[in-house]
Image (tube, rainbow, N blue to C red):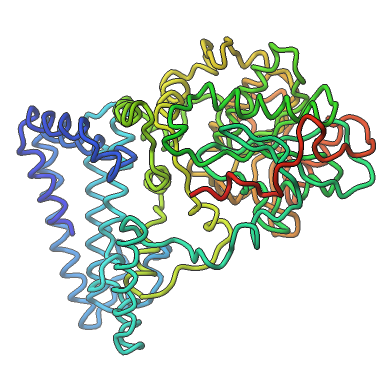
Length: 583
C-alpha cells in the first residue's frame, strides 16, 4: 500500500504545474465532476499535486520513509508468521470496526495488509500536513485524502478481507454468487452504488409518515399538511414544521414513537408540515426566492387563515432551519403573522465555519451548478443521487464502503432501517436555486454578515426577535455543533441551546424512552462553544420533553382546536399528500 501511494504521488509531482492546471480546467468545464465527484474532491487533490510539485524534497523524504516502513512492517508480519508476537509494532487501530475480525491480528496475511494500509495513510496525511497549502486547500485535500484512505482500505477487497473469505468458505461460494448478483442489480438500478437499505421493509404511508392529517394547501412548489387534533384543547399558536427542500419532509414524521410531529400533536399543539415537491423540468426554473415565498411564507399565511392566529411557531431541520429563520426575518417586515418561536435542529445561520459541506460548496462547485442550471433552457436539475452522493462523500466515515462490503463482498442484503429508507428517498434540486443558496450562504455568508436580499426584501438576523430553541448533535459530521452554536449567538431573542447525543439525524430522533441525554443552557450565550460547555447543565433523557415544556410557554392559551382546513383552504388529500410520492 505504501509503495502504491508513493507511486501515485510521484507521478503527480512529475507533472508540470501548467499541465495539472490544464487538466483541472478541462475537468471543471465538463459535466463529469457533477456526476462522479459531486463534492469536488478532485480539486483538493489537484491542489495537493501542485503543492507536492513545488516541494520535491518533501515528496522524496515521505516516499523514502514510506518505503522503509513498508519493508519494516513486512518483516514484522513475517516474524508473526513464525510465532513472534511484537505488540509494539502494531500500526493499525484495533478499535476500528473495519478491523474487528480477529484474523486481522492473528493471520499474518491479513495483518500485513492492515499494517501496510495504516502506514500508507499516515504518510499521505503527512504530505498534506507538511505541504504549503492554504487553509481551504489543506482542508479539501485532507478530506480527499481521507476518502482515498477509506477507498483503499484492505477490508474493501476480497483478497484482503478475512470476513469475506470466511463467508465464501462457509457458504460454499454462494456469497460470491450473491455478491455478483448484487453488483449487477446496483449497476442497473442504483447508479452503480451499493444499496444502503432494504427499500421494501418500510413503505411510505404504511410504516412511515403515519400521523393522521389532511393536505389543506398546495401550490406549484409545496403542500401544507394539517394534522388532526387528538386533545380536547390545543394551544392557540400553531406549529409549522419546515423541512429542507433537498429531502422529503417525513423525517419529522418518521414512524410511530419516532415522530416529532406526533409528539407535538399529542401535547396539544396544532401542527402543520410543509411537504416540497420533487421538481422536474416543468418547475426547473424555481429560484431560491420561490423556496422562501412559496414555501414557509405561503405556509404561514395559510396557517394563519385556518387557525385565526396572529402568530406561528416554526421548527426547521438542516437547510429547512436556515430557511425558517430567513422566513422569520422576512415576516418581521410584513403585516402577516409574527413568528413567536423558532426551533432550529442542526441548522446553520452563520456559515463562517460550515463544516465539511463547505468544502463541497466552493467557487468551482458554484460554476458547475450554474452551467447545469442553464441546461434545458434554464431548467437544469441536480439529480437526487448526486445530492445524496455529496452528503455521503463529505462524511468522515463514508456510508458507501460498509455497504460495498455487506452487499458485494459478503453477498448479503442491505439492512432494514427507517432512517435509511428516508435517506434513500432522494429528491432532485433546481440547479440555479441551489447555486443561489451556495453563493448567498456558503460563499458570501450574507445572512450573518448582512446584505441578504430574498423575496423582494432586505433581511437581517437582527430582525429575528423570537424565542429560539437550538439543537445541535454532539457527533454531527455535517453541521458541527460548534458552528450551530455560533449561529445561535446571532439570534436576538431569548435562546436555549441544546447539545444532544447523536449525529445529524440521530440527535433529532432522540425520542423519549431511548437511552440518551443532552446538555442544556439558556442565554445569554458565552462568546464561544468551548466557554459554554463547562457551564451547561447535563440532563438525562430526551430533549423532546424539555422542548415541549419550553414550547408550551410560547404557544398562547389553550382553546378548542381549530377545524382542519376552512372555506379558503379546503381539504385536498389525506396525509402524506401528493408531492411526497413523486419520484
